[in-house]
Length: 171
Figure (tube, rainbow, N blue to C red):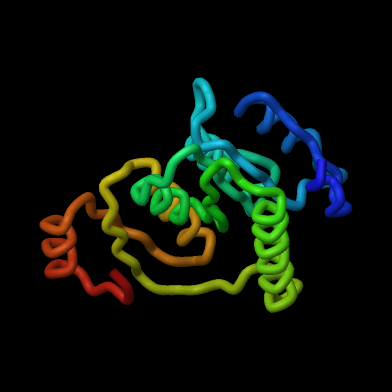
């Protein structure tokens, strides 16, 4: 296919468990990008993205999501999981290649601007207001990895109560 002209090896899997196994086996030659289908049987693309972020050998793997229809809620959930690109099928070859190039370029720029010692450490107390438990976990883990203290609220009422009781650097 035309995507194979991008000079990256292409590896396809048929489901989430196979994808996680491939990531685990790829420690010597890690993947550069992952393209996930939102509507897979059993485990959907967002659940797979969550698994990649929280329990794979490549938690920072740049991810793209492909879906059959545009859904703003799903796109927003995808963004909270660090999915860089959200494409609606059918995707033309040029569109896919452009999206892959953008994701890889963004990843390269981020790694060039990061110090060799690792990601920048932050400090501060953050209140995350999110009603979806999966999104809560993903956001909390990412912020904690950066050195932040995280409190959770599941709705606006809880957020107002927490903000009245505690001092936050960011809500």
